Image 1 (cartoon, one colour):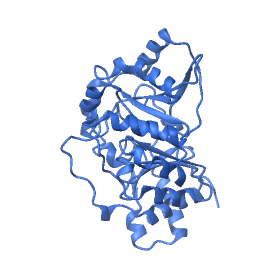
Image 2 (cartoon, one colour):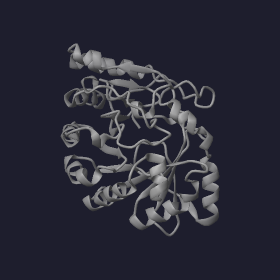
Image 3 (cartoon, one colour):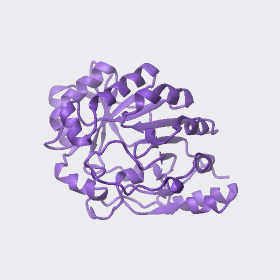
Length: 327
């Protein structure tokens, strides 16, 4: 059996972003409208056993990394139970979590015990009022979750900051100092036109090349690397252990090295964040598909992966919200 998933453009797919819910307890204005309620119903969600079957099939075919996402994954009930099921899959080498950390202080220890080794935390501001303006949430809960995760022994802990011109770009240096103090890794992300909310945020777009040039005037930046399967390009701040990643889907797209797909909570596999190419697994699972046919379905799905996104050429193309896709 071929233990690799090769897409039509020669890229090896070995990384799945796994959404366990499309719901979220924050309302970041670039992700979900404040009054949005059109979430999928729980009966449409894949069960933990269905998720395990799909991930096991992909792992059999060479997937080695899974990141649990949402929406906000911590709002899915009994999440540590699913993490335990996934961590027991042979061949899955890297099981991580992306969270907003609002509920992390309650679940960090259980998730670490279940098998999550490292986490990415979305944090766009260190100023309570600004954080509330961006997310409608409480910054204290996020900081508490972060510190609990640090005490629980997660490593690395990566902070994801979406940089928005005129909104939070004046906090870049503050976030760097915060991450140096707490031994976190920092990743800056460009805004993307995913869904109506994402398109509305494009007026805040700021090229991370400009941010990097600005930082180079204050810090000595040297080449840096970090383990993981994502698209960030890293530098290190000389004299510290801080690594800063730049995720640049607009100014320097990384499509030629894309190694990932996204499994939404309803069983839809999205082959590209910036395209509508997809494959539906839920109907197959609920019709009683065999394990061997599930492997063939996974191979077929990967043949649908497009060459690249078209965020610049067709910004209106993706109508689904990021929370529905899986971050």
